[in-house]
Length: 173
Image 1 (cartoon, one colour):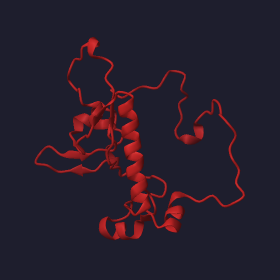
Image 2: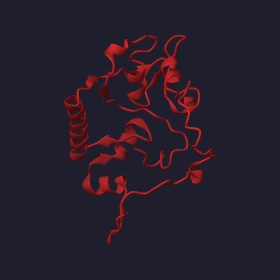
Image 3: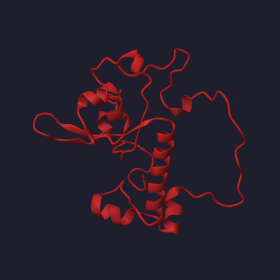
């Protein structure tokens, strides 16, 4: 069963019906044009969308040079930080059964957003985030209270079709 929102969370059909409860800080203003990640990547030659599209189609990218270095550095920082907090590092599988996606509330709602890999009569699915396999790590097991809390960290590639995502067919990354 998916997580249910609190009773005081207002219903809405899209983000225009979100309710802003508070703001923190003051939005910065700049005396220059703000660029998105694709424009910055073009200037710095750190992401190659064109060649990735040639290899894999739209919605893919090669991280290149300092872009690849930055990605690896952030991943290492994330993992190293969580290890200092006592978390256990996991390297999760990138393919899961449908039941794992149901167990994290991804199915049935987001079924059209995942990539299915046909394997005999039981398909597997590319994970949309490490959350899916990590959350299912103890699926169908009963843990002893004395063993809690258990804390994990994981890094994974994330595979999402995300139908309707802004810019997904042009520069989604």
